[in-house]
Length: 460
Ligand code: FRU
Image (cartoon, rainbow, N blue to C red; front, side, top):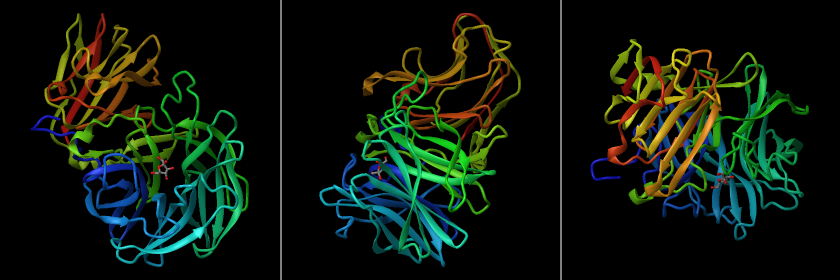
């Protein structure tokens, strides 16, 4: 960015410097939310992976802590890959994938902490017989007296799968079989699996590599999505619904959930994609995590997704307007001149609008990010275009019902935008790279009219 502003976020997590990818070990321990992350402190590219570490009391302001895990054992010397955390007997235990043998082997290892800051490695605990080149990202949980872990893998004929193991002490693990497996359409490898109860269902969240685009679905390089089903220890996982994407933006991958002390199921994702351009490298860092989201199960058995309520405590200098605004001709309506760290709630009224496309844009007519309804396609699009940074015009979208107002809760934080649609219905998350002159937020529309029922804008 220019001298007086940066793309570094203010209420999202990014690494202090260097490269970050997946969130790891999300947990609550010693009075703090704990977040670890795939970290290469030496470069703004993926490389020799470590676990970076941060903690927070509210999931929005993060305190950077010393690196938690550095490659050092024969089993993890080529990298500390993704994994999860559990609290056991007052200790914080990390289970991660150690990479070794010139990156040809992946196996699961443990580390232990009694203070939430320093970690002692306990070494290798779980290996796969046969090819272990793709055997990673353990997600552990406790149920009854047992520990369970699922691990992302692939079959010999290149289909993604999730393997299940059980243990009484976290150290000696028994193989329980395949929890779920891809058919030909669901990718060749499943990364970062997660498995948890929501309402009266069990959700399996996976990150398939190599799914084909299908119309408006699966447009990213890799996807993140879920199945809804039922499971209990000793039984098969019966899938009832899925696969459904959990975020519909340009940049969302490798998410992980955890249970907050008050029982909320919170999801945090990597707000990037592996093939992204990362213009922030010029500022010495790369990668951002999403705003934490609370997940609930809707009555029709799909996941509802909302920003965590803690964000409301950070709203200041509000502009709240309950008066409707109607724009005719080719006029635009500037909501705010300089948007850097803001929440914008806006209700568009399709019934009162007769333009074929309308919405808000951050930037100018040609460049920036555009959040708009296309009435012919009956979809809400997030389209971005930053050619000066080699990010060519592309869009992502979700279906919307045009017989009711469309309620958008939009978070912009320096170089990210997250658009929550209709209070829980869907979310689209993308990185954006506005220059200083592209930070004006306005309502725009094609020929005809658009009506905004109400809007609110806060600094965050
Ligand atoms: C997902 C992933 C994981 C792996 C990690 C390595 O983005 O590929 O499967 O553990 O990143 O950094």
